[in-house]
Image 1 (spheres, protein in one colour):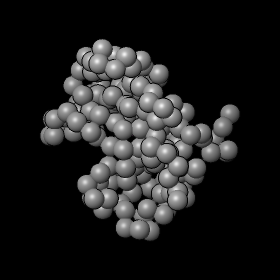
Image 2: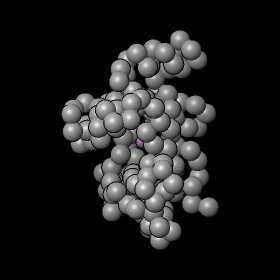
Image 3: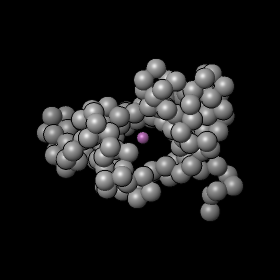
Image 4: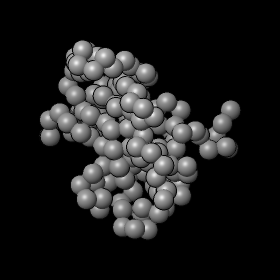
Length: 141
Ligand code: CO
């Protein structure tokens, strides 16, 4: 089994501050990590649930994938992040099984992780993110 944990479930929202406030009031959830990923045009907040995260995310610009998603589909679950020991190995395996890679090779994600996205088409309608906790050896400082 290549997947070791649900890393995060990402929910696209229009108003990130309002969503954070809602989860705080409803569940006492606190923000564990906050990050703007300029390359992807996303602003995200990670709320820790056990060893996994709930990721609330919104777009920071018009051409962001999250912005496009919100316009077309509205708010809701955007993708599921699965934690893996080795992102490249898991990506090769899912492609071999018929999945369609969006990232042809692993790349840096938020929180210092290494990630790769796999298209919902070919994965039964769910956008999948493979998440490796640390950067590969050769990319560490
Ligand atoms: Co994600």
